[in-house]
Length: 435
Ligand code: PHE
Image 1: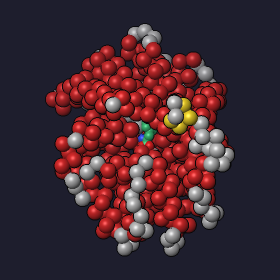
Image 2: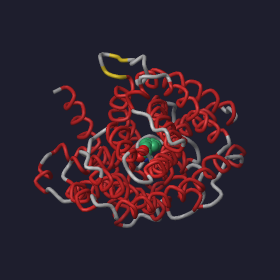
Image 3: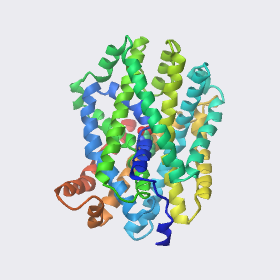
Image 4: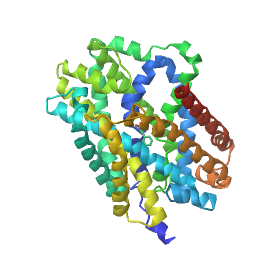
């Protein structure tokens, strides 16, 4: 009881919603979503994506909020209280959050570098950039920003930074979309982005891509939403989760409306992956009127998105240490952050002159596959099983407003449907690489 009284809290439900949107809206929305849509059937992709978001992502988010708010503690201790004993399950989820952060931070640092280069009117070629040791310096600075935010606490750090950065992000995004739509390539860009190719819907790969993208983009399955929920007091969880989910989706869709018209106006091919953001788009900006300003704005927006997501990933292990070991926030943050910087170093170095690789694959790409893809699914499964199967049903109902038919459907979703979907996505991903 005394412990609980001292627990940090969001300043209001709105603060909680903005911080959660800050976590959800990240590199996954602004960079990953658009090219995944473009490559997987354009507008037709929105069908599997909407299904994934509302039928699988939203219930998992709701489950995480429920676990966090009802146990009032973070992942490891929450699982302990549900399972009645300590287990490795919580530790696994916390470790995966930290491991994903270790490479997510590297990409965040590139974004910071690009924002600065454009603001200083001196964009740098990606290969020149990663052929130097510059990325290491930015890795340090981006890391410091994340560290200092989390160290300042839930309200003064995480909530505050989201309250400032998310509105800025939205304003920049809308301005970029408005500008992009007036350009000559707007129609061709939108045609590429959204014209539906329904034949793609028979390809199972398109569906598993939608599942994976939805979970990643909503920040579910890694204990982030569970931890954020533990700082929450009252409020209707379903309504709050719906707001977060819809905001996340709108921002992702808008990002594509900014990117593809510009790419087509410049007469370039829409690339996928790292190339789209770090090679194609910079080339677009370099050749364009007001390109330096647009580039600086675009990368500043991406940095705002990435920073608030990285912060949420760091909060998972930090809160876990505080709650399970009784560490102060300052001490826990320093310790966890130190470890994550060390683990992230090989990823950071894999895109420098050192070109660090394991089994011929760059560390960062390996991390994205092992932790960001496979790890995320495994952690999601753990959360579903612990929350869906071991948590008392009445306790779940208490949190989500009764035990009517809607709640019964919800329980079926988190017990059977979501784990099944996660399992299918896991097998599909393992198979893809194996085959
Ligand atoms: N949702 C973030 C993005 O879209 C990434 C993220 C995943 C953040 C999981 C926290 C937890 O980039």
